[in-house]
Image (cartoon, rainbow, N blue to C red; front, side, top):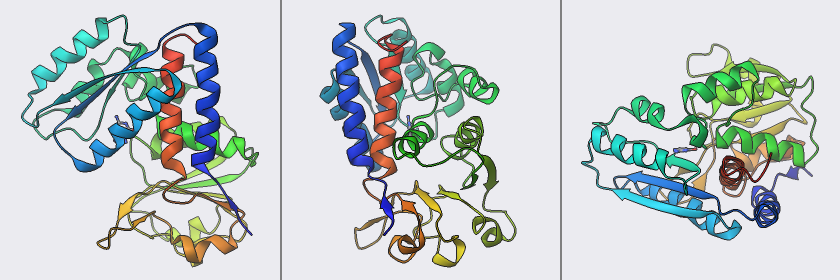
Amino acid sequence: MPILLDGEKTAQIIKNELKEEIKKAGLRPGLAVVLVGKNPASRVYVRHKKKACAEVGIKSFSYELPAETTQYELMELIEKLNLNKKIHGILVQLPLPEQINEQKIIQSVDPKKDVDGFHPLNAGRLMLGLPGFRPATPLGIIELIKRYNLDLVGQHAVIVGRSNIVGKPLFQLLLSEHATVTMCHSKTKNLLEITKQADILVAALGQPRFIKKNMVKKGAVIIDVGINRLRSGKLVGDVDFDKVKNITEAITPVPGGVGPMTIAALLINTVEAAGCIH
Ligand code: GUN
C-alpha cells in the first residue's frame, strides 16, 4: 500500500506549531491579502488563506479591488502597505487583470514583506542558496516530504512544469536538499523516458490526469501540484491518481495534498516576516 501524503493533517500540525510560536513571541503578525477582480479560483484561495491566518493568530488585512483597477492604483496601495508597521507580509493574489503588469507589481513589494517569495531579490537569493522568502508551494512540498521522512539526498527528482511560481523555485529547493534534479516541460522530447527514471516525480503542468501509470517508476514518490476541475465538477490533479497510486511508495492526493501545504508555507513565511522565528 502506498503512503498517502496527507497535506491536510501535516498542515494542521504546522499550524499548531506556528500558533505556539506566535504566542511565545507575544507578537501579532499581520498579512495583507490583495485580490483584484473576481476570478473564482482566486477568491477561493484567498478565503482559505485568510481563514488559516485567523486559526494561528495572524491578523489578515483584506483588500478586494475591482477588475478595472489600474496598475498605478495597485502600486499606490502596495506602497502604503510597504510602510504600514502592522503589516509584515504582503500577498497579491495572481493572476492579475491584463491591464496590470504582474512583474511591476511583484517588484513593488518590499522584499522584506514578500511572503510569496516572488520578488527578483528573493528569487536570486534562492538561486544562490542565501536566506530569503521561498515561494509557498515549493516550500510546502519540501516540508511535506521531510515530515514524512522521505529521502531527498541523491534522489533523482523530475519536475514537469517550469512555472516561476512552482517549477523553477522547486528546482532550486530540491537542489539545495542535494537531490539530482531534472526539469521537463511542454517541449521536452521523450518525456516518458525521463519521468520513468524519477525517484521523486513532481507534476506541475496543469493538465488533468496527464501523468499515467506507464510514465512512473515502481516505488516512486509522486507529488501532484495540479488542481483541475472537470466538467463534472470533480477536482483532479495532474496525475492519474487511481491508476498510478498502487505502484508508488508515496503519493499526494488532490485535494488534500499540496494545496493545504501551500497555505501552511505562506503562514510560515508570514510568521518569519513578523520576527517570531529567527
Ligand atoms: N496564484 C497561484 N498561486 C499563487 C501563490 O502561491 N501566490 C499568489 N499570490 N498567487 C498565486
